[in-house]
Length: 220
Image 1 (cartoon, rainbow, N blue to C red):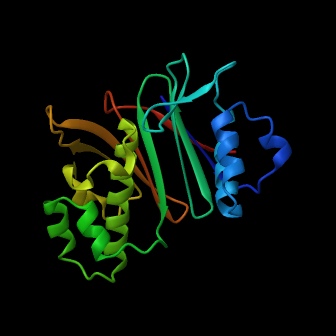
Image 2: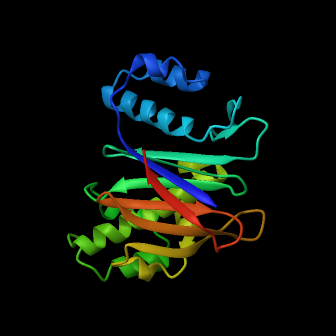
């Protein structure tokens, strides 16, 4: 089972933030002067508290990926354009990413994000067309979520990732597929993908293990 919860970005409230049992989270809140960024980090903390096990502490690996110390529950958070999502599971590694369809993705980003085959498909579209921009943004959120599974993030080369059956991303509000990631020292890694149209944007969930899962999306 994978659970996803959602909230609009909340305005920072220092009294609630003071109660967060996460020193790194507190440092992040104190460090960022931007009101928008502060509100995003604060809302992320509110969502995480919804599924934090009793007495659990949050740790961070060498790549900055968060985890619950001494527990098996995995989680990930994403926020953009006034929206925040968090996902968790007790038996799967997962990554989550959301981007608004209003974000401007151009040709340069396409060259950085797409595999050769994906880029050839994009070349058949008008670069100003809605379908072009949405397809590119969905590819980006899928690959960004996949990079979070490993914890490497943007250091991973997105061109080394290939979304299977990617052409089906066009015009579908919910799509399930797989992503194949090339590695230097081992066989390619294959992960599962769920891609949703949510809140005028693309929400992508990537996870390991068996493809057939149950999931639930709730607002708080």
